[in-house]
Image (tube, rainbow, N blue to C red; front, top):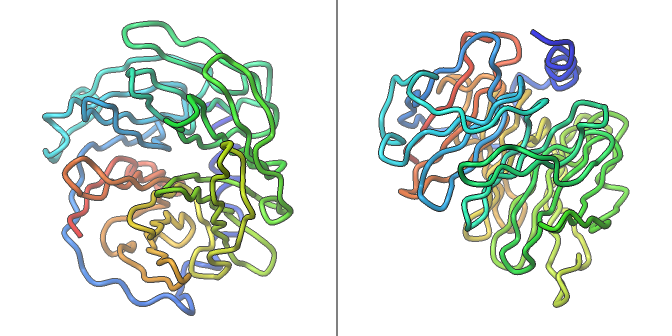
Length: 306
């Protein structure tokens, strides 16, 4: 295990234990059918998920790998790393995202010159697209602008990164920055972009809703929810105006509706162990990435039929 990975696990786990009990304002989760698609135990730590244009599932591994599970196997269970293909080796890997042309983009948060966004073209080698200091964490491909929206968790900001390697600030807002771990997951539904904030003062997490301006810039951001129910907000996905939050320290997936009301959909009783990302698959099932900070044997990708 590299020093960087130890740091990542400890950073995300710090302060989380206090939130593992019941959470006010978040309805109890009903029991769902949850299955393990790919078990990734031990030294390789899965962190983020993305579906490609062909329906294949891509998994970012913090040790510096991107793994691909073929589309026709995403409905299976009981798979392991041997059932996936390694499509890239990088200095590290946190967030992953895919573009319509099949290029995979990866956030690398190594704290050195390798830190930033890397691009992996279909069948090609990984190269650094742009350097970003701090902790580049998650990224969203914006079809409208041929760009990526990239969160950086240490400073609490969102950057716009062009596929040509250009970069500029997209959203700087005090609500994204905390003394702990700030801007994290990013997702889009319709003309709204959602940004998760992992740990804010008072033991709460946040989700901001940011309307896209006509020129692709950030409109006036509003707080959709700031509550204990989303403390540990990590990866997120959005559908139909609802936001689905991987609340890592609580071992929960929480749905936040358009009014900011929350409901726990999945919990540790369903096998969640420090979930770091959540994503709907092409068939409508919800895929969850188990980062499993305290029990590496539980690392892997789960699938839930809601």
